[in-house]
Image 1 (cartoon, rainbow, N blue to C red):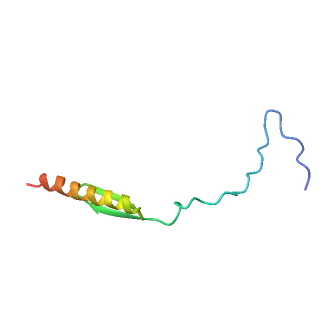
Image 2 (tube, rainbow, N blue to C red):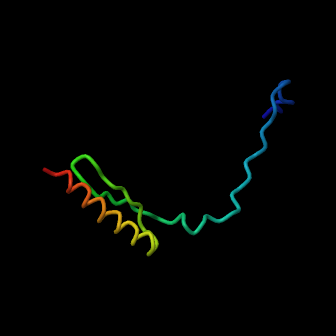
Image 3 (cartoon, helix red, strand yellow):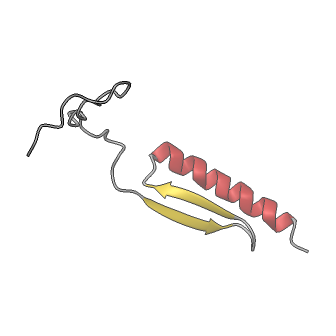
Amino acid sequence: LADPGPPAPGLATAPAPAPATTPLPAQMTRSQWERLPLSSDVELHIRRPLSRHQNKQVDRLIDFATELFEEDTP
């Protein structure tokens, strides 16, 4: 192959991308989304797994949201 020569004036050559050397964070593990219907038009989406504390918070949120949407039911 022929040498393409220097780049055209005004054009810079980009350096080659560096290989990824840092490991993925521990939180970048496999996850699954859970869909919880709260009413006919509203859903809560939760990505699992969650920490124990987050699970407790989500449980409280679901209880509150369930009560809230039941209040609107005639």
